[in-house]
Amino acid sequence: MKRALLCAALCACGQTRLTQATPKAIIDTRPIDFGTTPVLFPVERDVLVTNPGIVPLHLSQIAASDPAFSTAATALELDPGATSQLHAIFTPPQPGTFSGKLTLQTDDPATPAAEIDLTGVGALTGAIVVTPLSLDFGRVGEGQTVAKQLSIASTGQADLYLGSVAAAPGAYALVGSIATPATLATGSQLGVDVRFSPLPASEAASGSVTIDSSDPAQPRVVVPLTGSVNHAPVPVAQASALEVPVGSTVTLDGSGSTDADGDLPLRYTWSIDAQPVGSTARLATPDQAQSALTLDQPGIWSVLLDVTDSTGLPSLSPARVDIRAVPPQQLLLQLVWDEVPPDLDLHFLQQGAELDSAGDCYWANPSSWGPVHDGDKLVGYGPEIVEWAAPAPGTYSIAVVYADAHGSLAPTTNAQVRVYSQGVLAADLAYRFTHQGEIWNAGTIRWPPGTVQVP
Image (cartoon, rainbow, N blue to C red; front, side, top):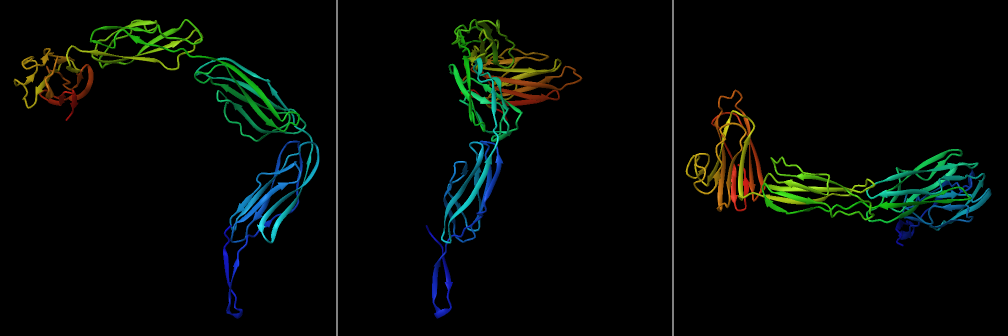
């Protein structure tokens, strides 16, 4: 160990001498009387130790001579100028008077060892009664939790010391927190809630609650825990086809769903998790093993299936099937608006083309260069549609013209242009028109890949 060197100048003879610095220990060696405490009820007292030196102080071989006494540590290091505490503990194993010594050694040459007298009296005993002696949680479903309660009563002549209360393994746990160590006054009781939450893929599960206390007759009580697992059913969803033309009806089949425990029959719940904008389609028989869905809009449909076994336990997660409704055309534009009198016109233009020119696909030029305009909706809502079965590579513009207010006293209207590329919604664009003659340059389409860029 390194030791600092203290340089002292000695005036005599004009010589200088180097002196090695040593640790210094100040230890409170006054006798400790722990007084009277119940049997197995630990009592702690502190012994102050100070290091007034300029190098670290080391304490070692810290021990008590009698088993009724103990220490929290067998060694200690103190920095220069620091003060610390040695924790001396008295835990009487039985009624009676106990005495012993706490001894330790230091690396202070002036105080190489220290000794402290210890005395204490153990009187009266605590007693624990735990009810019930075991807990059976029965059959519990995966993903579910059942809680039951234990009662811990202090029935002895003295207060009961609770060292710890713990449940194991992971499927079992205490509900809330129980701060231990704790004191349970004689004549009182404590309720402890224990929960059973079966883990996925577990079989019948056993565990225990372990309670350590100051009852000398039974210092450790182990309460057995038992339970069995109701395994959740597993949904399996299939579709008669995963890619169909718009307007097709797809059959959905969940009859492949299973339950590992044989808790049949299963109950089925189909639901639509996602569907294209504007669709009003509904599942034909959402509570049967087989259902059907008519895909009334182009795009992706996501359908979920949940199943429930005959005990009422649902599946942990739904099965999912994604179905794509493909339009007969690869590119489709749809214009809708929210007022009846105004008339809006959809224009789909070649790169660089002007409105109402030969390169503009609109109501007056519906099919001259590739795409097809399905006709002018003179008033109200739309939709106006431009579709193109096999688009030529290029960049195209989308514009909407507020053609006529038709005398509306409230000429504003909210418009939406939806662009479907390969049957998937590529863009949903919105604009608020305020007056007749207004033009909305909604964006451009690059084909391929069918991406939409807004200005």
